[in-house]
Length: 435
Image (cartoon, rainbow, N blue to C red):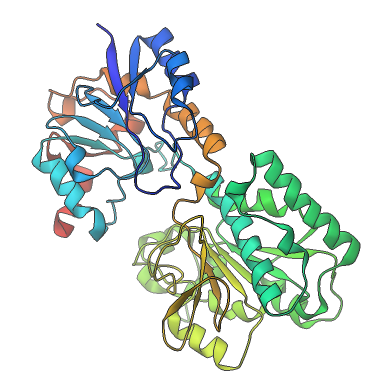
């Protein structure tokens, strides 16, 4: 008898069109590994039900008999079946309050939870992710927001040519559109009132590289963090280009002790010994793009208090913050709510703390879409599924009746088992304090 896996429909958002397993990979799993794929129907999924059926998958509503179920985003509490295995982005490893009832339900039903976010190699590097596509879509939305904001201020600019990422047919068309904006910048230059236009990107991982991929469709001059002030305040700048500056950890924090010096591993191990310095660059930046992984133990990039100071003197250079990492009141403390693709931005008032949908008003425009890869659903799904399918046979065929220590999974996957048969695994027992 063939092994069987289920693919759940996504229903967290009407914009969530991705899949963890594509039709092509479903066919491969059946033909090469004898794994049947059952797929719940969905009216919004980027791959049609006919595509799955043609690939040999079974499309039906009830997938409760599948011992292993794959999804992309969080699953409602009433979906879980006792003793089953679920593989998805649970967003529980930081003790996120909204998802603790879901995790408790998983534990109560004796289920097993495998979280893509914790599928890593022996050096802790993530292996299965949508980060690149978050960066791609997030950079487009940030440039879109910049264009609308400047237009509202009465500043004509080439970024108004851009549409939302999801409005383009595919990534090639996205890049073509951004390149046309770049051609205008080369030919006509940018408005004098916003030059030199400096875009600061915090982070250099998969998300950051996605943003670079979009920016590199424009005429770019890359500078180092220590050059930001001199370029912004000087007169010898290029108005026919955008200045890109990438900030690494050593550019955003410094040791609190006057005798200390920065060491990356020391910062990760003892962040309490460091304070943030990123705000010293912000007066010179037109756009800030946040791509960093953040936890509460780390200093923030931009605080609410600092924004009061920055906007207390009138309109600063800063127009838009693209918070691609999108942690609630996280590295960008004024990310006080999330947005969705159809309404991706709000204006944060530094003096009242209130937010207003859109790009009009006093304060920075915040782009805080929390499911950005869904704006490139087909490409994101193909890349994701292409990596995941290497692990699916082992996940589908493992014996989950044995003690956790004897569970035979690839080490990359076993590191991602947050709960096993209703119990938090040793590496994740710290989550108990949040339940």
